[in-house]
View 1: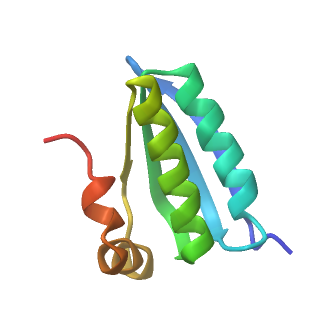
View 2: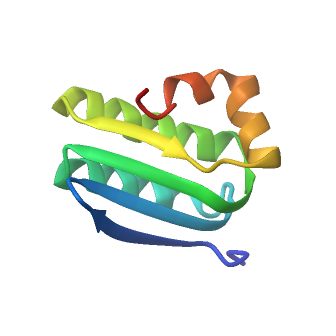
Length: 104
């Protein structure tokens, strides 16, 4: 069961926005990782919109970090936006929130 999980890519000016919805857990994290790594190969700037994500576990955090690392290896920018409640707390507690913060 994927709990309404989905990923959509939208081109916004010079960046690619990856909109994620549903729950990111062991069942969906691999798909998310593949989508994000592919996105960073396609665009020099990728923003991940987590505003419609209601749950994020450690496997999801790992997927975000793997994509961040892949972007860095290519000299691309990768960041997240819109994390709320539980998702924001997980990113904050793990320290990944600061690493994946949008540029100032």
